Image 1 (tube, rainbow, N blue to C red):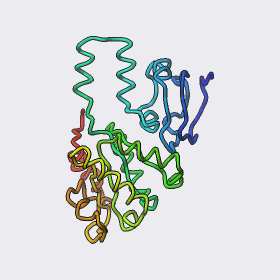
Image 2 (tube, rainbow, N blue to C red):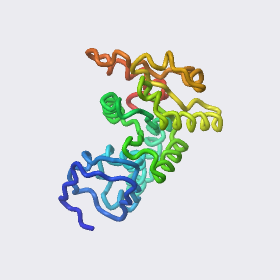
Image 3 (cartoon, helix red, strand yellow):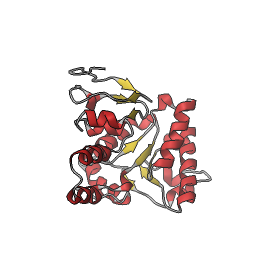
Image 4 (cartoon, rainbow, N blue to C red):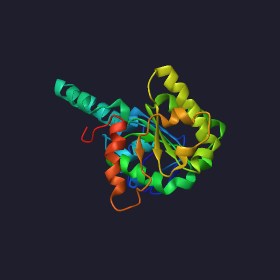
Length: 235
């Protein structure tokens, strides 16, 4: 397909296969809405010359660094290139966001902050939850991601799908013998949460955003969250 100068702003895609197409001249890729990950072919990345917005690649579920690896490998296989990759690649940047739609305003701000820092993440929109295909995709994404950012609120901690994602995260912790679930508090609910998993979830608090709406409080709390993820700004 010839998509030169096509404007896809606001387009909704989910589980879409994007193969063998040049996206370099497509407009509005940074404003595409992603309902679930999509498959983007290496042929598309190469045919586009790497000129694809990182935010679009992340929305598709692709680590944006893959773009640099593929294009860079085609143009240069020098030691300097691979050194550049090794210095910047941080496997702890791959995050799964578990949340309730009622907390959408906070989650959107969190996504924006992660995007600005190049932190790769994936999340499932509530309207698509529990469909068989997306349910499998959630299982897959949790198995592939290094961290689950659990947005804890009075609402989210009552949701069945959040409990499901917590259980999948604990399974991964047992398999890897490593911490996977990192709670983010946006109210007091986690402190009094009465649940069989509560003690385990409360063991490690990634960040406390309870007063994040005040002034510059949100940005001031981001370094604590990034540090908990093992991510240093500037990588």
